[in-house]
Amino acid sequence: MSFKDDVKQLRMQANLTQEELANRLHVTRQTVSTWETGKNMPSLEILHTLSQLFDISLEKLLFNEEITMDKVKNQPLANQIDHDVKLKKRYRNWTYTLSGLILIVIVSMGILTCGYYKGVANIDRVNPFLSYKVGYTKLPDNKKVAGYWTSWFTDNTMGNEWTKLTLTTGLNPGLKHPYVMAYHKGSYVKEARIIPRADINHLYISNLNALTSLLNNKGNTATNNRNLKQFKTKIHISDTIQQIHVNSF
Image 1 (cartoon, helix red, strand yellow):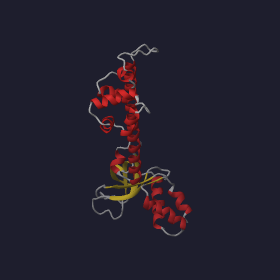
Image 2 (cartoon, rainbow, N blue to C red):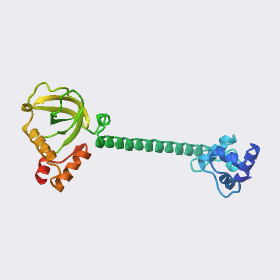
Image 3 (cartoon, rainbow, N blue to C red):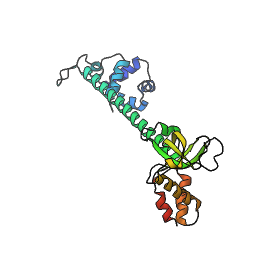
């Protein structure tokens, strides 16, 4: 008998309908029908599953013979098909694993990027692509009590790296011109303390003065309005405040 007759006979001997056999093999009933009419043949993986399901060798299932030798490799056909099926499963598992790893990387990068631009301190804290910086700002004049407050910090002497940080430093110990130094990674502040103005490079002070002047003269020009908008919507700014201030007037 041919394969189409064998598979139909085996199905009927097992008291299975085409629908029931299809469910066990995770295919459609129409697919089983095409096998039994000779219009199609199962894949190697399905053939392997059929031989296990009906407890019959692949040689017997395909050729109605117990042993069929592959003349090229001189091995039983069943061994080669079994080997091919295992390789297919292995490649499929590798593909799933690699796809999973790529998905994890993409999701992780998305979370880290979103956390950075949204100013999520807990995400920035574990972001391996960020490095710690030292930023400076003036202690707010209304800092009468201990608690959290938010301000823009200048992160370099060039005045083109700014970060909006939320932190607490405690009360002013009595300094006449108090500034704050923050050791931070993105929006995550690891340490902050109040320091006197004399301990700060004058370029940082100049940057902060230019920012204060820009913020206090809001609405004078369309350019100024556009520049001020970024300070309301962003957490990190890479722009030279000195140059913005000059171009806004």
